[in-house]
Length: 100
Image 1 (tube, rainbow, N blue to C red):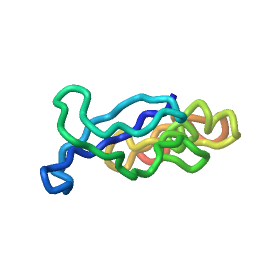
Image 2: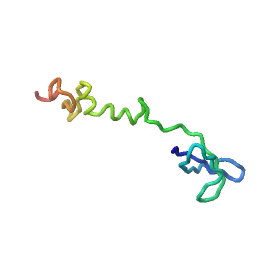
Image 3: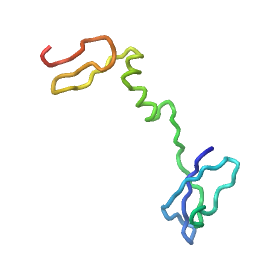
Image 4: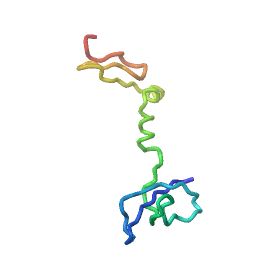
């Protein structure tokens, strides 16, 4: 079931800046008043929150150490000034810089 965002309206029908969310079936008619306060409202037009291929939610997991290693990449993280340690992957030296 989708969650819709509604704007609270003032006496002149203008948005007040207050919003609330309501989970409704798609076939249900939009609400005309806030169920808790009874004030007039209208459904707001907002961008959908979809975790698609290029969304930040997917990007974070795509760059995880486990996923990078699975894909054959090597990742190093800075552990000190001039010193990096391998945290993902099996190829390349275990450390870079420092007193190796």
